[in-house]
Structures are given as C-alpha cells and as structure tokens.
Length: 260
Image (cartoon, rainbow, N blue to C red; front, side):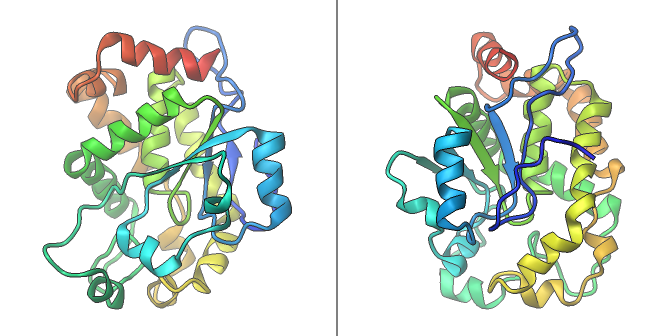
C-alpha cells in the first residue's frame, strides 16, 4: 500500500510520483508528476481539488484520436488555466476516418479478439510504443520537465501507456528499477475498480467484457522489459532521450525538475 494515492470521486488510479528514492540518496519531488486513469468522470469538487490543492498545470493525454473521439471532452477541458497536450502512443491506421475506427475500437492496444494478454504481450506493446512513437514519448517527457505545476499523465486505465512514460521519467530521475517496478504494479491494487469504470465507457466496454481481470493486471515482467531494453540499448532513459533529439542539458533539466 502507499499514501501517494490521490483519492477523488471520479477516478480510481491516480497517484503522485513524489517520495520515491533515487540512487544518489535523494527522493523524487511531490507535486511534479502524477499518473492517472482517464479523467472523464471528474466531479466539480475533483476538478477544484486538482487545480487548487494539487496544483495541476498540464494534462498529458496518451490516448488515441479514436478514444478521444468516442469519449468526448472531459471536465478539465473547461478549465482555462490548464494546458492540454495530446501525444498518442499508438500510430494512426492508414486513411480510415475516426468514425470507421471508432466502430472497431477495442480496449487499447487494439488486437484480434482471443489474443492472450499475458506479461509478454504487454511487454511487446510497451517496447512498441518506444519504437513506433518515440516522438510522443519524448514530447510527453518534455511537457513533464517544463510544466510550471504538476503534470498529470494519463491514458485509459493509467497502467500501460502511462506506465511506459512514467517508467522513462523515473529512470531519468535516478529511481532504481525495483522502485519503478513496484510503482507500476501498485495499479494491481485497484485493477478491478479500474476495469469497472472502463466497462461503462463507450471505447472500452465491449473488449473488456471478453477479458479477465488477470489479463489486465500489471505484471512486473512487463515493465522490467522496458527498463532492460532501454538500459541495454542506450544506457538508460537519459541515453534514449539523447538519441532522440534531447541535449544533455534537457535531460538534466527533467531530472532536476523531478527531484528538487
């Protein structure tokens, strides 16, 4: 269990990434990076708490255009003080229009019905996000580093796409891999409530009705695959970012932002 949960009426999987240990003996700063499930059901009181008490300034939406199209604008879109950033981690599919794609929408990532979603399945998709959408991953991390207040990064469940971006951010911050994995699997504490929320949403209900809770539960091996691959290929997330257009100063800025 953790006291980093942010308890709101309109979601179930939001937590602050502050307070995690770093390899140099420090801690990640609170109020800088927040991970979440989707923000469609926030109440007026939830919105007020996020803006005024938590100090949220930026929203990073990792969902696809299809999801955004199906779900419509959430209540935070009405808050003029917030800056919204859309960086999908799944590439658009050819020339199909949104309505055509929406008709086929399944729980992300889209896969043929009957696919077994085990730890290897999710690891493959997480690595796919880095390979297919490095622009979106790097852009999301830049927003986190530049945000004047707290940045909320979210997808649908706040587990897979969010987990990938958060893992990269925490690796830059110097959080040990075992702590990054421990944060990722915390979502398992609330996976039934998360799926319960998404079952009633237009973009996700049909596909989720055909999957088990175990298939959606976060497994340590899935996020470990990201950390191992980035470490082996680039010496860590910092090296990955430098290979994707960031300067050493940019990387240090993100690290400093997350730890001071």
